[in-house]
Image (cartoon, rainbow, N blue to C red; front, side):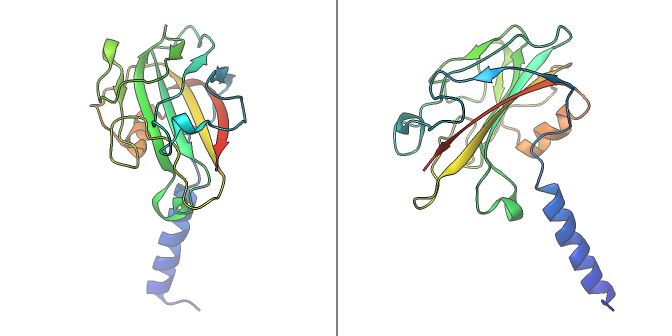
Length: 185
């Protein structure tokens, strides 16, 4: 029989493990096409877009979201970070309150918390409100997931929010989602 203290610790560990497995606030019914001309779908991320290159954000484009869309949000995470079970996913980029009419983010998005037309950037795991390119430790290949969310609201959030805060604000407002991924060694 486990002591009360051990049960409490086990429950906290189990809760932390379960909480760190999701990077999407909810399942969605519609799908958005999301792609990058900077690298092939499921392909290799060129060095230019990594910490070993110029750390330039890649170009992204997507299909028209549902008619009820008020804004879009983009999240880029490393699905193979060895620390994700403890600290959650390594976040490389958060962009939110993109106008619904937007169909692309150009290469070299400025490294600024506030962008034109009310678009904001959240804080990545490196502590910056900007794109932070892949930089996996050692020679291991990591997968990077780019997820775009069509939302039925503009998020009432300041610049520089964390993934956890963004996900909480998006909960119940996701109309559609698009994903693409690529890897880098």
